[in-house]
Amino acid sequence: MQNSKNFKIARGACAALLALGIVTGCSGDEATEGAGPTEELTSEAVDETDSPDVEPSEEDTEPVVEEKQKTKEPVVETVEAEPAESPESSLSLEQQNAVRSAESYLQFMNFSRSGLVGQLEYEGYSNADAQLAVDTMSIDWNEQAIGSAESYLSFTAFSRQGLIDQLTYEDFTLEQATYGVDSLVVDWNQEAAESAQSYLEFSGFSRQGLIDQLLYEGFTLEQATFGVDQAGL
Image (cartoon, rainbow, N blue to C red; front, side, top):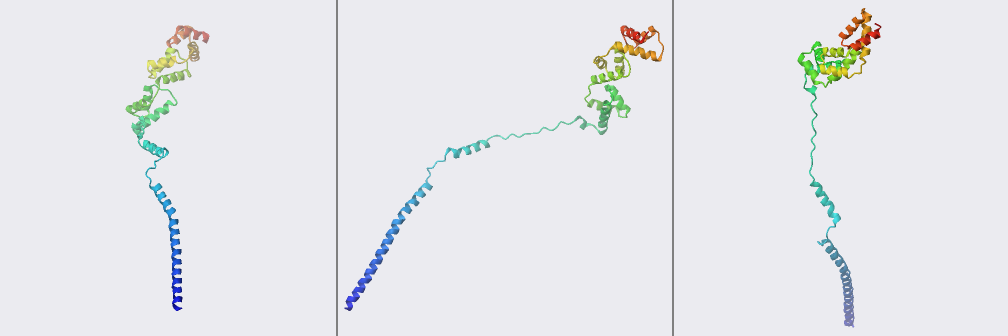
């Protein structure tokens, strides 16, 4: 009986061990079956990641080409031109002062070139500095002649020839003086009449004597006669 009990225990132990083995085996099979798909998915992911056959799209490559083209464009350097040196910058302080003095005179009066040089010399500048200052300036001497002629006519009466002579006396050239006088619109008959009246205000004249005086002043015979007639002789 004791042996039978022991046999039953041994069989029970064996049954227990057998049951435990079955459970363990089942668990192992389920684990093995569960791992299968995971390994396949992992393998597929690796295959997709490592695949060298994937080509970049044209959209990905175009910007790179454009960048390369941009870098090939030549770089043009711009060189700024240096400002031209002004004429006065090469003059001495004395010469610059002479220029300023000449500019000041021309604001109030009209001058010939020689007349303006002479005025600067009168102010104490050397002839060389005076000439350099005047020649440095941009002056239209024909315009100066016109202005001078207008100025003379505003103070007294002149014949055409008398006014040209006056301008040449002021050192305008004959061409400048003629240009200045002929650029003006002047009634020379009226100038003769005013000149005749002016002479009669300071001295007595016969008719012929007054005509001769006007001829001497450069009026034509017709202009002189007209002037004397207007004066009442």
